[in-house]
Length: 156
Image (cartoon, rainbow, N blue to C red):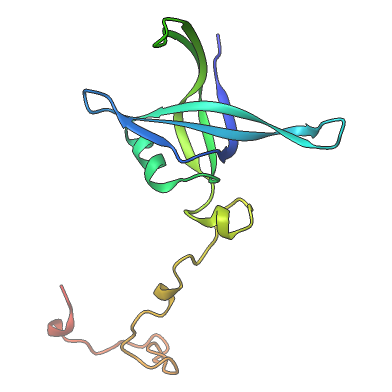
C-alpha cells in the first residue's frame, strides 16, 4: 500500500506553532495549491490543504516562513476524528508532513511579486569585506614563485 503526498503551494496564514504537554513542537498550517486548469469562466482555482508538521521542522517553519511563503510539503494523508465542545463528531483529513522545504527566501514572497525560487546575494553588505591590500594590487603577482614567509607570520 502507498500513502504519499507531495505538494507545492503558498501558506494561507502564518503557521500556528504550539507545544504538547511533553514539550513537542507541532505546527498547523494551510497551503493554497493552484489547480492545473482554469474553470469555465477562465478563473484559476486553488485547493486549500490543511497540513501538520512536528518537532524541529515545525519550529523552523514557524520561525522562517509566513503567510504567502512558497513551500514544498512531502508527507502522507491522514484522517482522524474527535468530539468537539458541543459533543458532535468532527472528521479531519490533513497532510502529516515528513518534511517541509522552503522554496523561497524569507520575505521574498512580498518583495518578489509572487515569484518563487531563491534569490542570490540577499546580503550585499558581505560583498565588500575588508581586505588588507588595495583592490588594484595583485597579491599573487609573483607568478607562482615561492613567497618568503616566516613561521612567526602564520596564524597557526
